[in-house]
Image 1 (tube, helix red, strand yellow):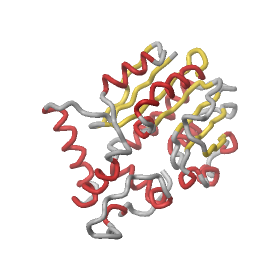
Image 2 (cartoon, rainbow, N blue to C red):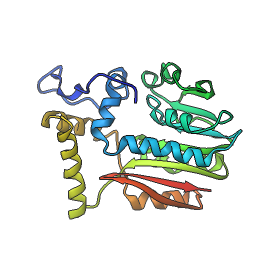
Image 3 (cartoon, rainbow, N blue to C red):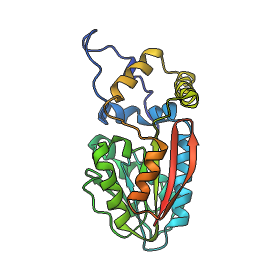
Image 4 (cartoon, rainbow, N blue to C red):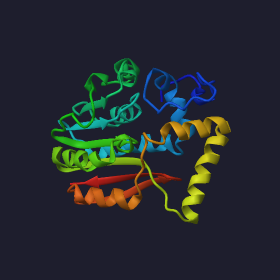
Length: 247
């Protein structure tokens, strides 16, 4: 991950003491602290990113394309670039200018950075063509729920035979004791990483209507409905889960 400023966004005073929390947005403030934010908020994030690169190494052959949809500052793109050969093309897509600007410079220390094409566009609009691998790393949860199946169908249609999708998401936990454990442990994880109670509460409020999670069952049924031949859960850390789905 790119070094960043410490994430203090939700500890700052509000413009008005009684004002509402602004909905979460991938703006310049978030981009500035994003590496620190995901490290302290998403358990297992570094391992998730590294393993995505290893999957790409298996999935992509010379002449193939890999897409990182919702690439943010390019952590997964970087992982794929490190693990794939010189004839694999990468398309990194994000609709937030503050996130995707400067991606080339952030990758410049790696051999083959010229293989990466950065596109500032909505992931629902980008053409998926001849893809060996598509990655949605904590991206689908920010797409309006009614649009999620259509996006997965477009991805499935753009994959070559034998192609694959990596889908990583924060999940909606069941309303039982197990779900309660996952929820409280995720909050404990953030406390252990230095977030204050105020920051945890404010960030929860900011994400409430922006990040809308689905259950494991919903994700797996949707992958089947979208036309994937199969899928496997290959990663879970608390309430964050990743699948590999294939054609």
